[in-house]
Image (tube, rainbow, N blue to C red; front, side):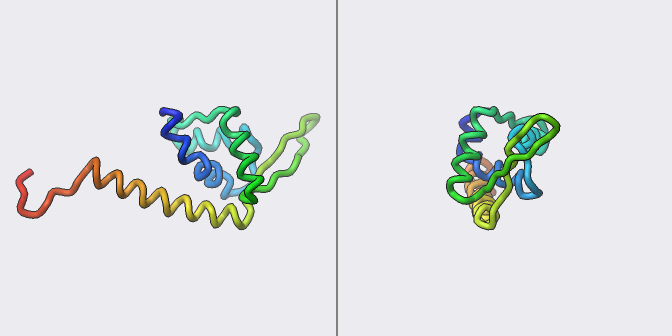
Length: 113
């Protein structure tokens, strides 16, 4: 899928996959890919700046976790992040309804199709 198509919805995608609990960066990428049936492939260079920005905005918090010898940063939603996700979902529903109405207009009553 085109990167431009995802760009405007990246925050919502990241918030949604973190709704079920904390994840580290690569797990976030994998979750988006899995949920999208492999259609959406995010790059590390795309998500880490977005995760950092969402954290600065107070929508996420992060902590370091050790896995064996390695340390990785895990991200989780804050209460503000949950509210933002609800707003993203509402905006997405409005957007898809409007685009659907243009791309697949309902036939007008009395009009031949």
